[in-house]
Amino acid sequence: MPTLAAGRLAELDAFLLELNAAAARVTLPYFRSDHGLEDKGGVRGFDPVTAADKGAEAAIRKLISARFPDHGVIGEEYGEDRPAAEFVWVLDPVDGTRAFIAGLPLWTTLIGLRHQGRPVLGSIGQPHLDEVFIGHAGGSRLVAKGQVTPLKVRACPKLTDAIIATTDPEGCFDGAELGAWTQVRAAARLARLGCDAYAYAMVAMGKMDMVIEAGLKSWDIESAIPLIEGAGGLVTNWRGQPVGPNGGQIAIAGDRACLDEALVALRRSAK
Image 1: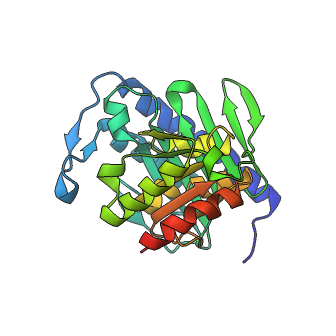
Image 2 (image 1 turned 90 degrees about the vertical axis):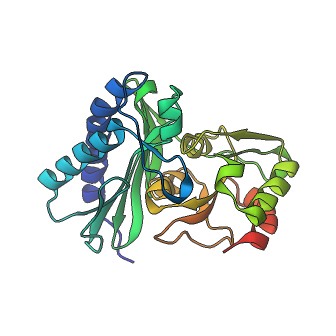
């Protein structure tokens, strides 16, 4: 598959930082304030959305339309616009809305870019902490408080030494999936819950070793793929295969050997 020229990638990388800044200008005034909460409801029960979600995605889309009118967009709040375009931005303006409305700085803004259907650039931004984790095939970095720090996953070949995470086992996994998670958690050294996509960034930073999720949409995961891979890690489905365009069951890991151990359990519940 054709790759992006270095100059083109650098241009899009710089633009991605602009998009994060624009989203932050919208989301931060709502955080720990009146966030305009609504309940989308549906089959998931309580499904919150705030004015920050809607306003941030609108701001991101406006900038993309002005700078790159031929690019497509797929977003959680406002759907698809030219999803078959050569370049498609995939947006989750506030991932972890439950953390957002609870005042916890674990929510993030997820922005990914597909080129010819393949994720090539992505960021996880946490505006309250002034952090943007950004990555592509050329490498990943943390941009925080005016400083730039390279990101690299850490070695952890044994699951028994691993720090792992998932968002909400009882809310996100069905019965078979919950059994697989429970088996992996029993083998791991430490598990953390409720970190949403911020846990992905911690794998890229070398602070955590694995994240296991299920039922994800494209906007929940695509921004993390270039970030994790650029830091030397892996993102697969529960069969150990590349993640498709629709999300699903996801395993993120910093070390192939550790991932392979977890996949022994995860494959039994793979869909």
